[in-house]
Length: 429
Image 1: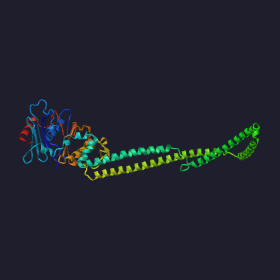
Image 2: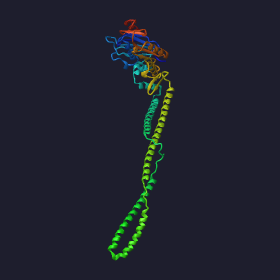
Image 3: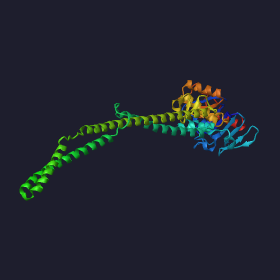
Image 4: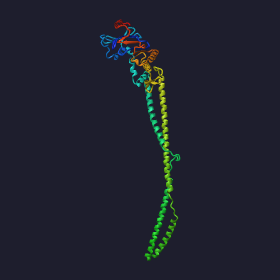
């Protein structure tokens, strides 16, 4: 059974002189009136009476009053809560007449029900965490959120690398006419070296012939000058003549081979290999890009799987409202985040979560509902009735939507102060 407020009487608290209210059991009870007439003082008084000293207003006694505050609330289970006397001492009486204290009230009073704006104004992630903690999946979902975030960051990095690799691959030149593998110039270089060695040998033979010719000349001079050695010189001369003939015959038909063509071929190989390397670089870049893109897709699949686990986790628990969920650490209702929800939907979500926090607490207090139009108020009131929730709210208005009107600390049309005081003394309403 969720506890609600059946009746309440307040005297000399803040702006209130004497107010007596019987809220509707389920639905919306609107306390209307102009500014500074005591509407909010009613909500503050209820919070103080039920919530304890931490909710006591800093200036609890009505200005100008010599009578201390008196508060009396009767709950729907017959529990009576009173604060009266000089020290506003708490007195809790159960239906059997037994006395109790704040500890008993704390069992069914949810602090956020006394201060719903505190929940509504909390950061988006804090609201979502409150809900997750209530339904018992806060730690699990947080772990999944962290896991998803890590995978997302990893995927983001992989995606950037893949983009860079793809961009690099596109920028590389490509030569379709080039062979697939590098060409080796070693065979051509070997042939070049053999030809150069042969040409060097030819040059040596030519120089040798020139040298013999020079020796012949000197020999002729030696024959002329050294007559006494003529015979020896003649023999030497004959020998040299034969050697000259052989040398000149050997060198006469020699032809040097050109290396220009080989040098061109070698140069062509370098150009070919440059193209091959460029093609290999492009293929490597494309392979790298493909590999990183495959990693990116795998990480995307992991993110989807993690999100499915989160969805399944939330599907397995009982949420306070249909269509209410948590996504990326924020509340989602009817597909909308908090900042996109209507005022009515925000109130529904807040009230439902507060009730889930403590199912024994069947009411909430709401201040400043003048921001809502009448259609939204009606919609919210109908939802409260359907949910069996009680809401006591204030609104700067004196229209028909108000359950009561407070003026100068009194309920308009209510009995005078002294009669209410007699009722309190008698302990009846």
